[in-house]
Each structure stands twice: as structure tokens, then as C-alpha cells.
Image 1 (cartoon, rainbow, N blue to C red):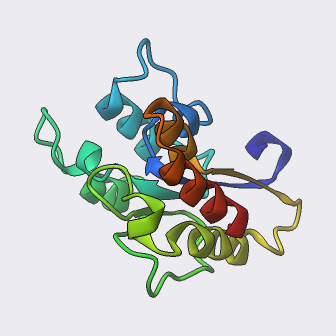
Image 2 (spheres, rainbow, N blue to C red):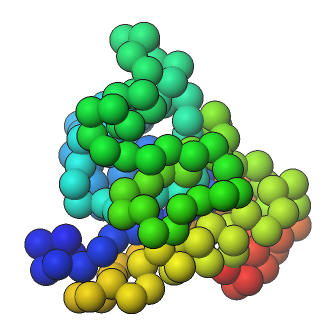
Amino acid sequence: MKEQGKETGIVVSCYVTHATPATFYAKVPKRSHYEDIAMQLAETDNVNLIIGGGRKHFTQRKDSLDLVQEMVEKYGWTVYDTLADIDTTCKKYAVLANDDHMPKAAERGDFLPRAVETALQTLDGAENGFFLMVEGSQIDFACHGNDSTWMMDEMMDFDAA
């Protein structure tokens, strides 16, 4: 999409380094190579914005690197830890809103719908259009856990988004 001149974004309720979002910007031998995926995200020019959890893969690394600081100083990202006060005119930002996956829908409130709204405010008006991947990540988590209440909460949250 970037090669076609489109703005790009990813919004998830899991780690931004988890398998599905990572397929849009990283190549690693194993989906569990979260720190390598985080580094590839930091270095990419193919993503304008990314919103979700997984901050620990950027700040609590085995190599002791503060990847958030590098993203800002070396790669031109603006990095936020909440959806509050985001400059939606910024053309390259990450919201790493939790160290882990985001909390369950029942606990995180309207994070996913607000994150999608924020991304759309940023991407709307892109001269050549945009691509936005939105994943209700925890629908899958709930199904693996055979937890129908959690699944329904996640599905309603995704529907609201």
C-alpha cells in the first residue's frame, strides 16, 4: 500500500508485535520473536500509525535497548502511551497503551472504537487514500479459552469500532 502512495495504519487490542499486526510490517522465523518484530516496526517507513499494546517489547528488552527512545530520536516516530492528546496531524506515530496485550474489552472500556476513530482522523484526507487494518484480537483469545462471555464482549467492542 505504501508503494502505491497510500497512508497506512494498524489498530489492535493485542501486542502491536503479535502475529497478525506483525505480518503487515515484519519478517521473522517465529511469531514469538517479539523483540525482533518491535525492531522491524521501529525501522519501517511502511506504517504511518500503529495502536495497541506490547510496550514491553520496546522497553523491557533482553538487549536493554530503549526502543521507544530510538523510535523517536532515530526513526522519526512520535510515541504515546494513551489515546489522549494525540496529534492526529502527525504522519508517523505509535500508541503503545499497555506493557502487555490490552486488557479484556470489559476492562479496557471503549479503547478499540476510540483507537479506530483516532486512526481515521489521521488517515482521512490522505491524498492517495489509505489502508487501515483493524483487529479485534481478543475475539480469538476468548475462543481459544472457550469463554463465550469474553468472546461476546470482544465482538460487541469490535462491532462498535
